[in-house]
Image 1 (cartoon, rainbow, N blue to C red):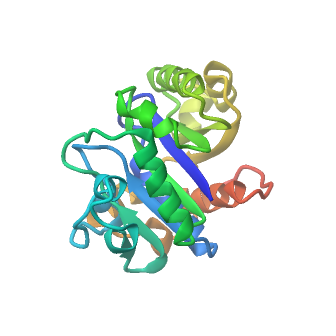
Image 2 (image 1 turned 90 degrees about the vertical axis):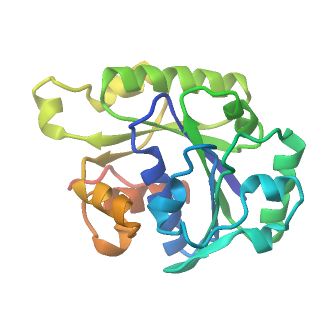
Length: 245
């Protein structure tokens, strides 16, 4: 089972929307996926997945052994291979061993992936999540401030022991890059010091789907949807060239 921490150096990178899309893309490939909202307080992953009316228990309830994972995880209405654990309203006091208990339950239940949507920036709970992650994805946009934040987050997670960190550059606008108004992909890789997992183009449908709780992958085949499907296949170990939209 792979436990992937998805993080970003600052807010506004589209990290939660990408977590939702990648979770659905892996489920489409036949994998069992547990998406966990680790952004305590904000808790937006349920809205993005259109599942806010299906949740009762949080990941903290499972970690603290208040309720078993089988009862707490809510299956997605459009693909039962994808399940969700929401975040508690407040940051809980948990230990690493308790999160490992959650992960052990997930593996026993047959999940292939846990995609853990971490909070933006460098809050204290990020180090807790990094202790259980087998790998990490750092989400950035081509903006200089986001890339700097990605570099700092990557260094923090490396110090905490997270292995195999990779960069995902979101909200790409080729015209701005061509005119020198945004960093290009090579710049983002050089500044962050991370290998590239994938790039995702700016796509207005992401906002529309997030606001309506609809799955981007069920509505379209091109643009950001295609990019996310290709990234999911790379997570599965396939080699794929960067998509041309």
